Image 1 (spheres, rainbow, N blue to C red):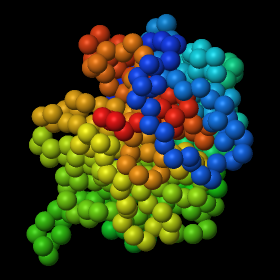
Image 2 (image 1 turned 45 degrees about the horizontal axis):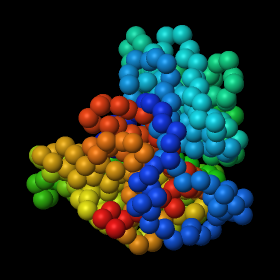
Image 3 (image 1 turned 90 degrees about the horizontal axis):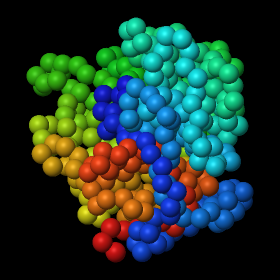
Length: 399
């Protein structure tokens, strides 16, 4: 989606096979998380009725790559993402379905879905690798192109009102009914060099989340100032956008990326530092009125770093990826779950998986599902991944 256009985009997604057995590790290592607050009665009932499971979803029969990932979660068990390099979705019975590719396009991904089943995603054109944004509904014969094909294009999200946000040839935009309703401006308090590098999501109200980058030469101090920071555009465009405060304002090796916004305007993301072999990731949380630097719960026990990749609309559940880097490479990688308080937890591997696997979490829903990816490093088995009843499976490593 979307966030691949950010200067500090998250690590590449993983992918592809199916195992329907429940994870034995979940039962033995389960650590009950605090009950989420603020969920609707329907969401709470759905979560209470769920059965804990960690499932590798089936892959499409063929495609240009082996990758697979769940990027978004919709109503009635719907999951959307990518399988073997192609845009795909999975229904509640865990059957995989291909999104039809228009002529001239070779691959793509579904990046988001709303509660009414409207999907948005990105396609890549075969001839020049330019990208186009599309919308789609399950069962349609063809996608609907939202933009032309160009570099720097891709949608980030869609809300239940059908408002879509993303990048169009490097310009951040919002669409309604297939028509652009506004271009998203740079905050007035930002340096003139500032540009929007990614649009990262939209909540139910219509508040839009993005990431900005500024870089310029400070002649007075004889240094290069480089800053990457989140931006929130309030719904409707009647108010100026917010530049969210970050911990580091000037260091070119460090940037802060936004990744999710819930219905109350709570924002999650992470600060990333990359210098030589150093790879540091610190999870970050902002609350309205966005007038203070973010807070952090710190990493999951036993891991050096943690990224926050998504937040549920109303339950405060936040997911991401815990990792420890060795010589600049992510060596120990596990999907993480944070209920909104306390120390972040991790999610179990599927039953029967080897001891050397990577998992990542990229989506979380109010009905307690988490979507992401799986890779077995010994067999190079990739798959999209779903955790059901995630709060009942999340546990503290070593406990």
